[in-house]
Amino acid sequence: MKGAFSIALASAITGVFALPSPTENGPITARAAAACSTPVRLSGNPFSGRKIHANAFYASEVSSAAAQMTDSAMASAALKVADVGTFMWLDKRDKIPILEPTLKDIECGEIGAFVIYDLPGRDCAAKASNGELAVGELNIYKSEYIDPIVDIFKKYPNTAVALVIEPDSLPNLVTNIDLQSCKDSASGYRDGVAYALKQLNLPNIAMYIDAGHGGWLGWNDNLKPGAKVLADAYKAAGSPKAVRGVSTNVAGWNAWDMVPGEFADRSDAQWNKAQNEKKYVELFSPQLRSAGMPGQAIVDTGRNAVQGLREEWGHWCNVDGAGFGVRPTTDTGSSLVDAFVWIKPGGESDGTSDSSADRYDSFCGHSDAYKPSPEAGEWHQEYFEMLLRNADPQF
Ligand code: BGC
Image 1 (cartoon, rainbow, N blue to C red):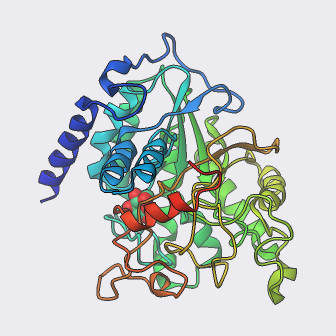
Image 2 (cartoon, rainbow, N blue to C red; image 1 turned 30 degrees about the horizontal axis):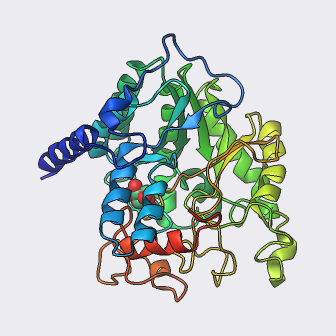
């Protein structure tokens, strides 16, 4: 079943590459993607002077979404979303076949963007994104997931790449370590992240280890332990040069610089000075540096256009009323933030609302979560249309 799926997926992707693109640039195949003629050696902000590659996988999801729309103005706005450079999630071994065609499509002047996301016992504090590997399958993670990905990257030294490393994993070890599932996952997370950082340490790659968001590691008591768990993994990997810092707000909803902050009126706000992502980065980055790792950040602004939607800060599933946020840019106004980026591909679900499903998580049943919603990662047409309607800036 799995093999069949992987072949189907690979040929679907090849199909996408051969098909004429609906974008103004003309057919994707005619774009004559030309990588740089010499090896890329990243230093400083990897996004500076480079456009994030708009990958054909997301473009095909978006163009099929647009094709289903009866309102032609909305459909043409939707197609513009396909041009936004968005991270591609390598969320299981069967996705590895889409990596190489994507790398081939990246031009000099662009940077490819991918999420490494397949740790054993994945998503230990929730159910919606539990992955394919069980606790204890670290060897499979290394040999069947990280190693093949590294082999592919090594074939494309002339292409710039940015990676987000394992969203939510290390933050869960700070705040959810009382859960048996997170205790069981802990050593695999630490060793798996360190292995990924060490193996993916290539001159053309910039890595950002995931650091949750202000409502997670931003609490006064979490800042130091959070920085320590990340810095420990970084040091265990041999302090790889390719690590630039952290990603924040991945698949999240927090505003960049809203003042005083969406949850600043709550009684517990006195314990958290990171009431927006800007404050979080300003507080967390020095902690990272004193713990011995680089402290630059990228912040996911893909779905944070609308505030005031969540009942609680920790609500993470398909928040109803959300809109596409600021488009990727290096114009962040903060020397600590390399770029605002779109990490969660807007329109892919965060988790199913079907309470009888194996991966049903009660967060996807809260009254602020959009229902019905499909399984995590699956396309969610109504949600995509909502993000588009509520986009700020508009498309
Ligand atoms: C899912 C992944 C998916 C990613 C991006 C995660 O919540 O678990 O399967 O690739 O979101 O949509």
